[in-house]
Image (tube, one colour):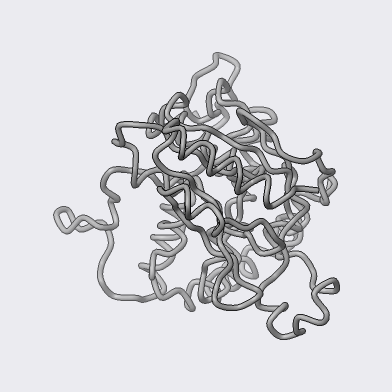
Length: 296
């Protein structure tokens, strides 16, 4: 069990001592089922910090806004947050010595939409949000200090690709129809890209006007081009935090596409979990003479 006051005291201590300039955490939102991110720079604001069933957001992406900061940042990290930090370190966006990682073992967060519908009196009955139900790394994989006891993953390893296997069982026409229906819904708000720690390019190709890689029209062909290009961009680098799917306002099962690619890469190049070990090079970022080359 993580003591919230312990969490606040540690943040206050780090800010008062000047060891860090900012602390990234979560605060209580307007409604009881919301706990959005908060960035504090004053010790007196430490009491805003919270740790409860709705600390969903992966905080690692916010480090990009401070990557040129002259000083350190303390960031509370669940398993997915810590994998996101490792992703940014591997992509040379963040230096390990510029962050203080405070690990928080995560039992899995609840679904805020269902919580709102079920009511606060049934909080204990609210199920985990899908991204946490699919989590294999609830404990931080990288940290400077750890609060609370480690917890067991809620998903068995053999269940990791169940959604993918269901899609693979479809015929080629059925697969095409399925994804066409999904990306007919896409409004290209780019929320999936903006929330993703692996999408950390200085300038995204989709924002370029010259050359214009992606047209302005929100139509199926352009949407599918965007989806497949982004999926391949994060291939071998996706940390499976599920944030892309969580923030999608059109409920597109983006992680099914990402997990299909993860499954195929693992089958071709061996087991690899992005962001778990910062020393491991991504399978598509290295060459080995034994790599499969049936396509040659």
